[in-house]
Image 1 (cartoon, rainbow, N blue to C red):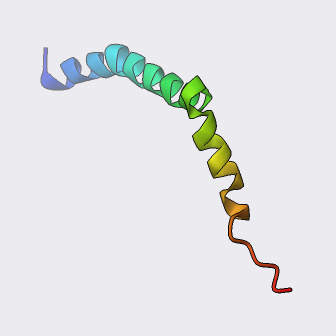
Image 2: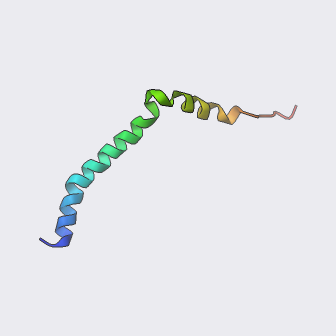
Length: 54
């Protein structure tokens, strides 16, 4: 088996599985219970220190 075939087999099987798991973990990361404070802070950060010029 050539190097190309070996790497192609790896990418088609384990590489794809690894990318899928990584994608799912990154999609679920903001929804973990410990992230609520950081998510709220990020959602309201645009409103902090805002001066309307009045």
